[in-house]
Amino acid sequence: MPGNIVLIGFMGSGKTTVGRLLARELRWSFLDTDTMVEERLGLPVKEIFAREGEDFFREVEKEAIARVVTARRAVIATGGGAVLSGVNVQLLREGNKVVWLQVRPETALKRAGLDDNRPLLQGREPRDIAALLRRREPYYAFADIYIDTDGKEAAAVAREIKEALKAWLESLT
Image 1 (cartoon, rainbow, N blue to C red):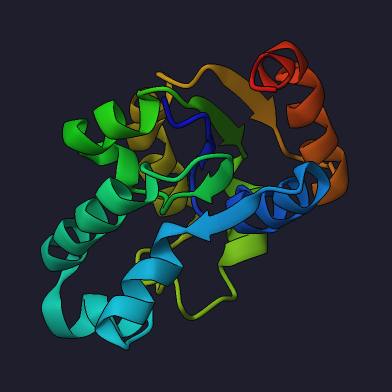
Image 2: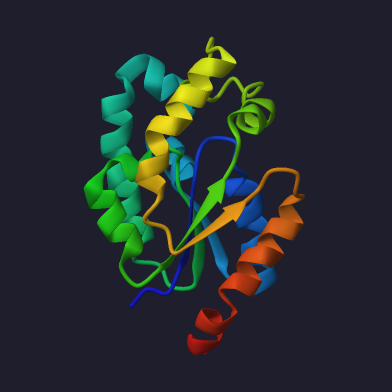
């Protein structure tokens, strides 16, 4: 049984930032599936999307998720669209606690919209981002806990996750 904390959510919800802080606080490893894909292919996500397309990226992402879920006591940050695959969802849930970091579209755009490494946000209007988030929300709903990240510092979100999973974390020792 792996016993990891998996962070899911839309782009800009804070998965990487919160994940690093939470892992440090728990003294666990931190793994980021987007980073794993970039390292495997030697290209940033934006380039992978531009050269090979989203479908190719999602296939390599599946491989990264299959590898990452074998870890033990890791905080895992997934890409925003990782949950679109039923195979990924099944792997992420098995023996892990899944945390949905929720974010409003305006906040996601503010946090991630200026990052040119977010190909699905480039050139989009705020209403387009809101529509994409609404389409994805049902895919995030399988999470064990939901944490609203709007208006909160990353450290506060990390503490909130740790508190929400306190009993589970104690059961791992």
